[in-house]
Image (cartoon, rainbow, N blue to C red; front, side, top):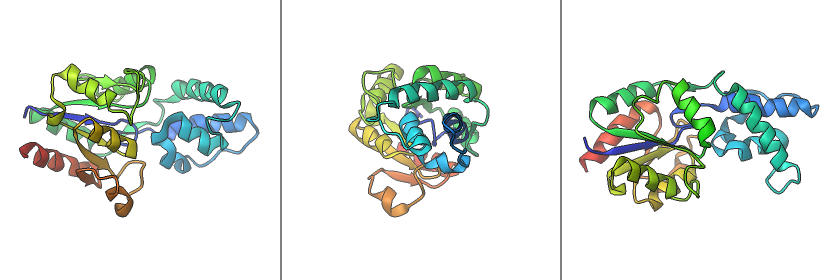
Length: 222
């Protein structure tokens, strides 16, 4: 099947929230604050450092100490990012199915390359992943369509022959702007609220990874 399947990473392919939350908790303890349960960080995990610092320290980008805290967070995260992160159940089987059926697949994430690529390797995805586009690969991260268009161009596909799967609204905005079909990974960090997710106007909603192959194949058949 000569089609391109692109995935967001955090909250779509991999459950990285525990390691992200653990890094945020290091910053809390250094400031004399108690650790938060890692589960409380899940909803913020797809928002990267911005979301984790908001949850962990109630700090937004306009705070005078934000950039220093962001660098501190990224340093702590890099040191521990392979400790607890795993693929969501069913993802490895999904990727095997795509490979078996002749699809090309890749990753487009807002996680910067120096963090994204080692995780892709650690989770055993690198061999068959056609491309990994990070948040700093192109001049504009998602929700700008540039990263998705870059992935299509580098793998030799027309955007109309590509589908993008993600768990954040900016994923769907970017995919639609790139001219791709889009799917919401409702099992990820966005919260499985059908009414809210429907308003994102994706082509489909996957409530679990096991639903994705059928959605992809239906899309590919047109």
